[in-house]
Image 1 (cartoon, rainbow, N blue to C red):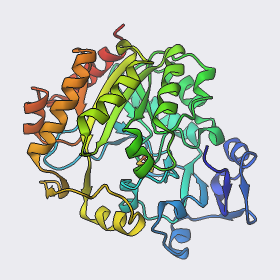
Image 2: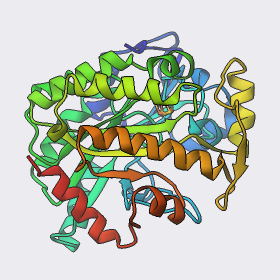
Image 3: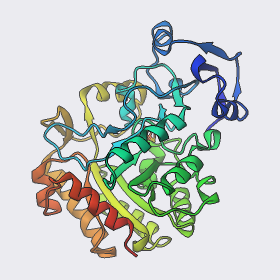
Image 4: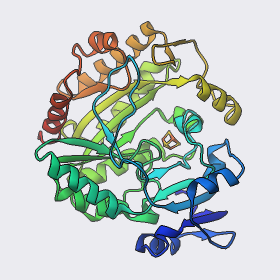
Length: 366
Ligand code: SF4
């Protein structure tokens, strides 16, 4: 479990009376008196920058959500996207993954929890009323783990309750934790998926140091299944380790010794990739990391990836291993080129609305 102590806590004036703020404050400790501020951006300019994610996690900012609530997943130029939408609830993450893209992406020197979830829900309801019947797949795990602070916020309880009443939305929590106690208090209303990112334990030990062990993630997933939740598996980032096939086969065997294929909503695959700024940050923040070992090539979206032949081989091995468990799994690739999709999965997800329907069907299969 992540430490509940922060060196400093800032609270935006606009949310200072929020019950969510009171709840969070009753569950955390701090080294210094609380500070109330009126303007997030002035605070960001005032404080010295931080570069290591662990330092960003020492300071907490509780504020209101800004800008468009429902954002399309950033995707990548020249690479195919699965039409996923994101809500930025937590900005920052204490799990300390060496490859975390947030190192090159976030510029605020603290972790942000956006507390005004009633505002999020009212905007989602508005979208739902504008486009009745249109399916949206939404998640919160894009700029921070979806569940890592759930024991402080209880947001998962609110999300399950809200989405239970709005079945046009499919909502996915994405996590590398086993912080599921709140979710286990409720039965799934049918449109909630808990996505676990998974890797061999050896990769977790070296590159995801504060995340839950593989066993704990799988055990959490098995308990969630008993409450009716569908599980998603994200083999992302897939790392080209020396005994790749055996290591990932062990992961798959371990998962399906506890979970049945019909409990899986979908599975994503994405080989390790990075923009050049992230390479510098990994070398600076995690000099002991092995993740940059190997050869990479710059792709159309300016991200570096393993050579295409290597990526194809990794995907084909994963797909073959997964198809041995169940040939009907819904598998998709994250940020990959059309030719890699075609050569591995044999189809292209060009029609976004059809993609959403495919995901919805996967959710309701038995
Ligand atoms: S769990 Fe995700 S968001 Fe958190 S540190 Fe790891 S990669 Fe980054």
